[in-house]
Image (cartoon, rainbow, N blue to C red; front, side, top):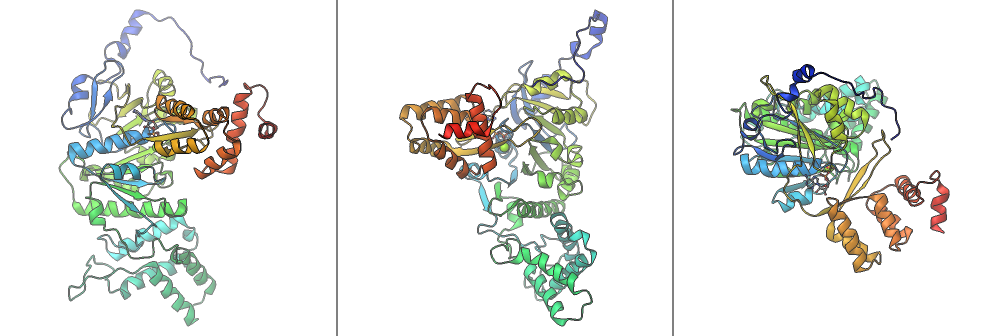
Length: 525
Ligand SMILES: Nc1ncnc2c1ncn2[C@@H]1O[C@H](COP(=O)(O)OP(=O)(O)O)[C@@H](O)[C@H]1O
Ligand SMILES: [Mg+2]
């Protein structure tokens, strides 16, 4: 980094009186031990503080609300902390948890810890028109809002109206009363909610009639919905196979979203679940403050955590009353909406290095430049914790934990790729240790070389930069083509593969000259 800092630090002479006035000499920048350890038998152990080595137990008691934000670069330890937190919360408070698992990175761990995996799109479905205890009128409003977020239907008022009317009609045909949350008919038989397929049918009937005055609006409304009802893509247009009552009280539940084809559809699944969770929360009513009952986890779910007026925001606004807690984690703090950030009682800041992210965090949490520098140099698992206390206290709101002391998760190896500064294209792919070692052997590596690479991973908390891995594999004589196949299998796209090899060549050449495609060709012979 050869950037000139905007306001270079200056060394100035200061007299003792001035130094004496500075808070740091009266209170170390850490809350006192009574406070940190007060929840020793009913809180979540996190780790020891940096200065006084005091064990810290997190509790929702002192903070403005029980929600948690976790930020830090890829590989800094966000998911590891979440896993540790969930295990301990279930042990200490018997908390339930729902993980909206965008990338499928929790499912093996959830199975291993005895939890349940619900794989959406792979045998499990969620009917968008399920009511989850709501009145059809209220649910329709939510469904329209969700469709508006995910498609551009909001820009076409006539199509929006047509869709809304057809959904109402579908509930009526299924014998629901629009303004009642009754789920049984007069004879006490359970009613079955309609699906989007019924809605499409109603619109098509209207088209057949041929009397509607804006046929193209009607056609477009049908077209839009059909994308969600086509055979094989009807993930949200079939009767639900998930019972909402069960999933909020089933211990640890992983909602695996990877069976859904794209970001859009995953967002639809996650948002719908969030809506049901919110509704469930309200139905259960306010609770005495104390143990957390349900923790909802959004890890790297930027698409739904960035929406200012979303149901996620409702959960953070009202969660405290109901002892519902939300954990959001992201590499990029600016992806988490202000509305969520301002309702988060505790922020865990793991290693963060992009200046604009640090500006954002420092601007809202107001920690010192000293701490800012420290955060940039954090190792894996090191964290600064900011707590928004609900009573004014005489000590620092932000303090450092030497190392989050976690529960050993299952053995995953992580291969990471760091983006260019300011361009957060970093990724981290995970592979089971035994699968990875098997793969190394298939590359033709000797036992000795397999051990050497394994050791390198273990020493670095089971992670390695992909560029270093490529260099090491090539040193051991692995063919570049085999490495390319491996990376592609792991989901790395072509452009990134080229980028990785360019960086590898650049690094091997000892950073002489500029990296060029020529180098890539030369090495390929
Ligand atoms: N506090 C910690 N103690 C020990 N290992 C850790 C800790 N935090 C993270 N790790 C290890 O570092 C790797 C990356 O952590 P992970 O939580 O996946 O990072 P992130 O979610 O921030 O990308 C994993 O192998 C994990 O086991
Ligand atoms: Mg992660």
